[in-house]
Length: 188
Image (cartoon, rainbow, N blue to C red; front, side, top):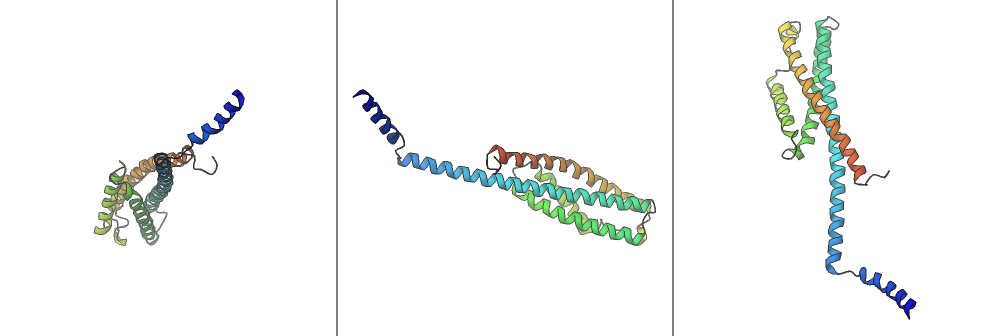
């Protein structure tokens, strides 16, 4: 009686422990939904962080290109036509990556402290584009006061982009590590 009764109660106990009630089934479904949301937001944050890092890398490169073009002109390493072509190309590159940056920051406008400074910077650059302040006439290319003004703006851009790049880099690394923390990486 003793040993067979214990064996029978051991077999019965798990069945009653796993009996599904409407409440426990709903809790599991909610937990599964929460897990799926967590995976979605983690993947979205990772893609967004890498997009922001790519955009900031492009803007930093464009700023360096501007400054190199101005330095080449200042030291007579380039002619006016090539210099103006460099400015035009770097302006296009900067504005494309600036647009990518703005689009990637928009979902976080009210939730992330870096979004408002990025939007203000984009508005500043957009204002300069709309007013033609980024353009330089061929006759003004060798005027020291003109190209020094452009150099100051692009030096300011470089420092803003470098600071933002380091913050975006840290965010991207954190987002990638978040995938491993939550165990949704195929390598976990």
